[in-house]
Image 1 (tube, rainbow, N blue to C red):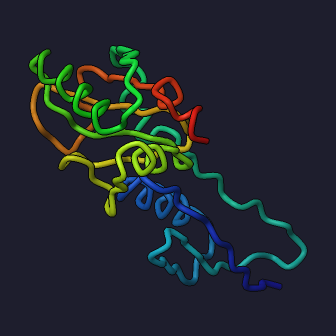
Image 2 (spheres, rainbow, N blue to C red; image 1 turned 60 degrees about the vertical axis):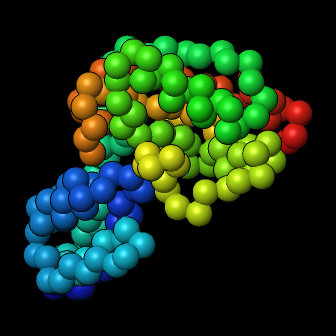
Image 3 (cartoon, rainbow, N blue to C red; image 1 turned 30 degrees about the vertical axis):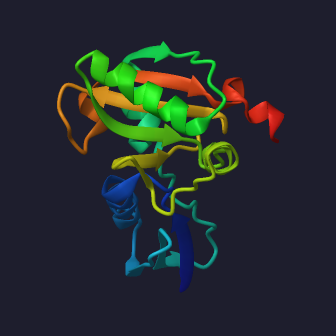
Length: 181
């Protein structure tokens, strides 16, 4: 006898459309799908029929290659020890280094639990209200430490991190956060 089973699947932040498509593609491979619902919080729930005596395995969906880190991990990375306490001066210096090498900033990348916003608030009395900083998007990635600030840069301005030529890394704790946390 067949029974209905509802299963939920969460699409991680910053995997974007590709994350949703990967999750939906995986769900569509599940036998006897009856209904699929997607909400704005990144959750997909689906109703499917299973044999009552069986305990079906939920499909595994791997999103690791869709995170921002996956796009830049094989690119050249330069770690900058700017020795600057103030967040606004650090960001200006970071952008200056990028443009001095004839590159264009593509995106800042931080942890999902980043201390970037607290660091900016405490040292510069400024906290961004959006996921943009100086017109550059801020992407979150759960694979990064909370004190790491990355800036991906490429030869041209684009929305795709795959064109990044180089990534610049600043450790926020090295820039004074340890004194305020």
